Picture 1 (cartoon, rainbow, N blue to C red):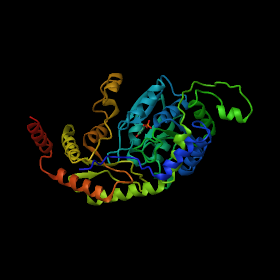
Picture 2 (spheres, protein in one colour):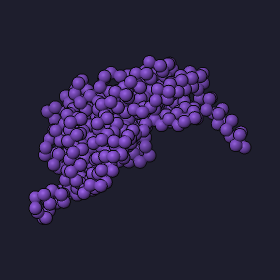
Picture 3 (tube, rainbow, N blue to C red):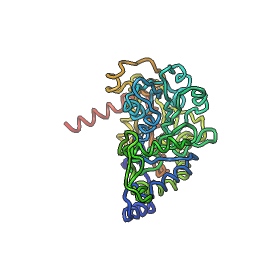
Picture 4 (tube, helix red, strand yellow):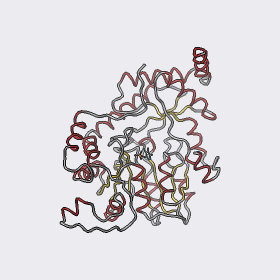
Length: 396
Ligand SMILES: *Cc1c(COP(=O)(O)O)cnc(C)c1O
């Protein structure tokens, strides 16, 4: 049967011609298309400044560096997120401190954030899990009258909004990713958006070695001298990629609507014992559609269901393991097991079902049918095991 991935890009003819046009232009990288893409991102998010970089991870690193966060500083992040949310803190020599998540939507729990604030806390990185915006109101209140910055890892939530305000205008700085499974793609790519012009200038230097200008702007100003003001990296995004990004952004609203329609169908059709995460915010942009297999000790019931789905070509996935349970972090930070019970329980129960704009109605039906059939079997654990036995017998 046809394989259904959990997420995938949509590329049409206009995307292809935009890339071809960029390839035939004078600038393959750091040309006028980068600025055009940045303007389009401002329009899409309501932010004033955008800085395109080579990946979502580079965007996160740039934000942490821009805040002069370094050794001795702490940054609070959700226990359930992608590794990059924590790694960017380590890149700067600072310490990630975890907060638990809200069990109904798996975004960072403001109450747990509050309990973890110390005199060393410099920033909170909110991550809009699956496209569900965090509670930015409570997070903003926690940071008010402190020197704590609120930054957003919005790699899941381009096109989402919180109480009518767009993601991108809710935090001091916001990072996006344009990896193929995200809402729009540039193959690899990312961006930071902000309302702060000083930060925007600094972020632009950060992506280009810390240099105060680039070749094209020096040429335009008739100068050839240059200076380096801070330590930066090569985190540039090419004109070819930005051309794809501009073309992709035109589809964003329609694609988010499509994702919401698919989510509605899933919600209306998936049956107990499967539990969908709660949609407490209509501005959800559904990067992921996540369900839980409740009462899944050690993840056994969940793992069995994923295995059974994959045998039918449905590539369900897990987002995510708690960061502190990853080997590198366990070695670095010690055993934190038990400190974040909602995160740990969720990590044993979550399944991301296929969710992308071009997922056909027939495929959605196939997923619903398979999940309802396979999850309601008593002793779900036994199903894939017996299948495995069968397979191994055949192979013998
Ligand atoms: C995808 C993702 C990233 C990293 O983005 P890249 O573009 O792959 O570097 C960071 N954080 C979260 C939550 C993500 O989903």
